Length: 173
Image (cartoon, rainbow, N blue to C red; front, side, top):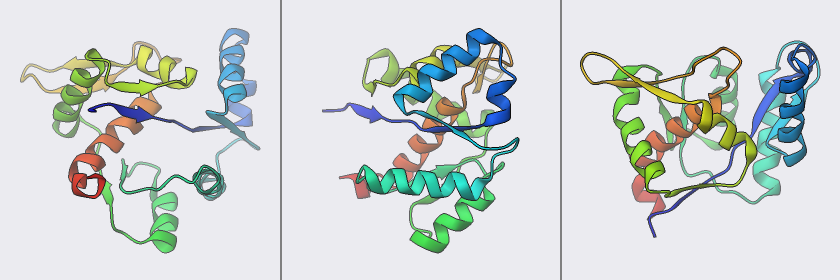
């Protein structure tokens, strides 16, 4: 009926969580409790461990991945592993920036304003609340945030997923 359901899953290092102020640590704990944020051991995320956890999560929930959009920054290990296990079909690169974000941001903005994006996780609500679109002098838009403490990675991931959905829309029909 024109609605799009959104689920999100994020990963953060144990060290990063320890460095948060109390208010933000409490907020992160809310996300951890709902299952949308996973804290991984150590100071730096091991992308193969992230991949394994995410792949297990997809299997446990019996999700079917039809398309996979990604920004290549810091995604090489995950994408390489995905390709080895699942093939290249449905993969699409979505580079961040006004050139590639403008149109999908406009489309997602229309869907959001019509309340056609359905999400029930506090982490996604938090990220959507922090995301703003800045417009350059040519009318191009790109994602931004007001402060470093505001996280919008999940909105960026939504944008990547939207682009992949649009490029491979026929498999969803």
